Amino acid sequence: MSRSLEQKLIESGIVISQVDGAAPIETPWFVRAIQAFSGWLAALFLLGFIGMGAVFLLDSSVASATLGLVLIGGAYALLRQAHSDFLEHLALAASLAGQMLVAWALASVLGSALGWDSAGLWWALLVLQVVLALVMPSLTHRTFSAFAACLAFYLALVETAAAPTTAGGLVLLGLTVLWLNEFRWPAHVRQLEALGYGLLLGLLVIQSVGYFGQSLLLGRYFVVSGLDWLEPWAGDALGLLALLLLLRHLFRRHVHGVQPGMRVAAYTAVLLLALLSLQARGLSHGAVVVALGFAIGHRGVMGFGGLLLLLSITSYYYWLDVTLLAKAMTLFALGLLLLAIRWALQRRWHAGAGVAAEEGGVEP
Image 1 (tube, rainbow, N blue to C red):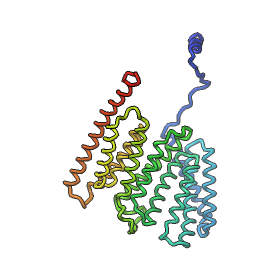
Image 2: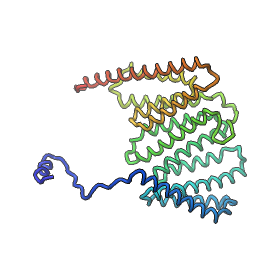
Image 3: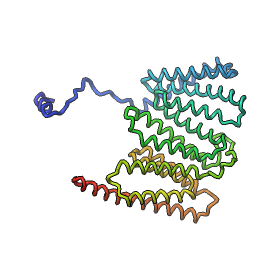
Image 4: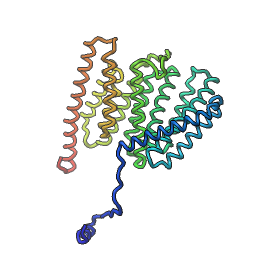
């Protein structure tokens, strides 16, 4: 940049930032993948070597818990200093080994004291994963811990004979609140995104195993209890509550562009979706995630919502308690409903934006 042009820009009030050096070169994805693989390979050999020498520690719950906490603490210290994918994944593998040792110790203590019918182990692991998701200085570790917390929460509810779909509904409600408040703390946006992805993965797994009527524990089906009448309405009710929170957030953000008729149409669509969800179970969850991704402009969240919709529709298609004609009519009504909602939103939203622009004296 010539001196005269630079002086003119400064006089015009335009700030010019001087770059002292060349821009850093970003590491290609395949190099990062090789580094991550090398980190896991080195961690497996290291942990195998430690395990061969410390296998006797598994006989003691205190020794197992102590070694596990040491590995988790070492992973935390390494992640704070890690500036490469190799060190990050090495620390992640060490942390997973530490968590397995802590889980082994908890299973030994709680299993001998309370018996295996208790959900104390899963509640304890839930607390551990929540703490790790909040404090670990790694986005990958936060995502995995949030995902593991969802699974532990699901298994805890299943073991306490509660409605299993309640876990999916509560996870959906939590991730909706999280993604809607993503930019409330600008300094922690990436950390919140990592937690959000973990919750989405957890919801996807919970929905998948729920369609097979089996818990995550292999060969173990749901426990029959007096709360079975909640199935599957509790999960759908929580999903619709999340959708209402999403609509409330959108109406508050676009308060000047939303007319009363549009609010009535939106809440009517929610009611129709609730009626359709009585037939196609889990349909509301996928619709909520798709709407959430569209509302915040996040393609990844919309992709997860599409997967949830495909899972619910596929499960409904192979549901033997309903005839093919009833399934076809339900899916046809759902398609017409979604198209009508899209057309109404586009038409009313643009109309409301035009009215707001005219009132403000701005060209729409």
